[in-house]
Amino acid sequence: MLSHLTEKPLASWRGKDHHNGRILETLTVIFRSGGCSWNRCRMCGYRHERYADLSGDELAERIIRQVRWVKKNFPDDDYQMVKVFTSGSFFDPMEVPPIARDAVAEAFRGKALIVETRPEYVEADPVREFRDAIDTGTLAMPLTIAMGLETTNDLIREKSIDKGFTYADFLRATEIAHASGAGVKAYLMMKPPFLTEREARDDMIHSIMDLAPLVESISMNLCTVQSRTELERLWREHAYRPPYLWSVLDVLIQSPVHILCDPVGGGQMRGPHNCGACDGQIVKGIVDYSLNKDVGLLRALAEMECECKEEWKFVLEQEEPHCMPLTR
Image (cartoon, rainbow, N blue to C red; front, top):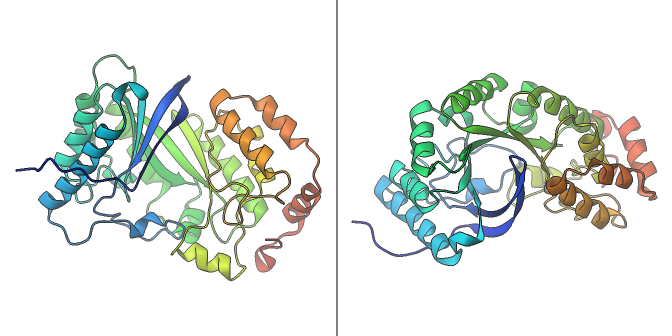
């Protein structure tokens, strides 16, 4: 029999998000789970955040305790949407047992839910059952399946990230999600390791063009250097630099659709940054754009003068794989 104990998730916070044409009050929760089945992505720090050596019943109980903690600490009326993350995949039954998944559905029934998973775990029956469990008939799209595609380029995804699936796998999962009544959100990764600034920018533009007609929303994650990762080792060896914020503006301005972007770590050495003098204004502008879709704001920021803009342009033109990164 399950206890009534509570346990704090890895992280949880309130915010605002643009979703299906509306700005919603959002609750984001990162649950500690059984751990990602793949567990090899070069930049992911969450691979270390897992319960080890628990039975399925014990794992379910620990996740349900976290659900109870969230319900106790965040009043239902304070948010309209919930973004659910785990160490890997919400629909992996070995990572999140079905009974724990049911507890999430019961806890947040009537809310818009975005749950993240790898594409190999997107199957019709679990997705449809979860969607039906949260649906009260008040939302046109109560469930969105989020997948970390990172790029539509299979070579970059394999060699730079070691993601373990193909673009075809993502397309298959997208078809299943749509047929099961769920929307799809694609996460892209701006500048994984081993790419020049120019290659990273161009890959994002191409990936967005590929995905725009296929999914309901696209979120561009700007690569940050997390602790205890292969990427951190490269960064410490001066073999990696996070993306310039100028490049981020360039991608967002060229996009044919609205792109969600939260510059986590923006302006810091481990995160997307320019020179320090212009970073704060650009980071705020990107956050504002994600909510209000004001491309004019981005264009105004891109025209802003700063000494580091010429440096960025030089890097775009001159940086090559054999001499990267040119700057820190």
